[in-house]
Image 1 (spheres, rainbow, N blue to C red):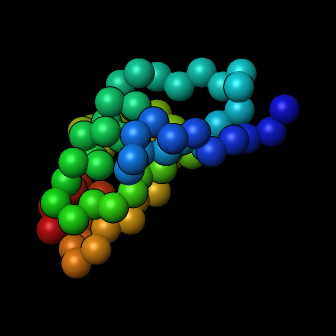
Image 2 (image 1 turned 60 degrees about the horizontal axis):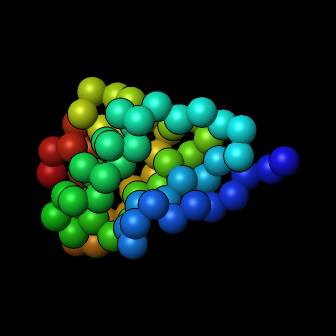
Length: 73
């Protein structure tokens, strides 16, 4: 039991346990967010779920840009 850091790609990770179910749309949104300009890493937390275009329950690390909750600069 416990949470593990799982790489899904070079820039996309989740922190979740083996028995945690995560919606596939939330994972897709993580990958979409990772493709935004200057985005370095995106991490889905145990409470990850889909949002309106971008996932809820995630952390994002970008360089040189600040993105609000709407994804706008």
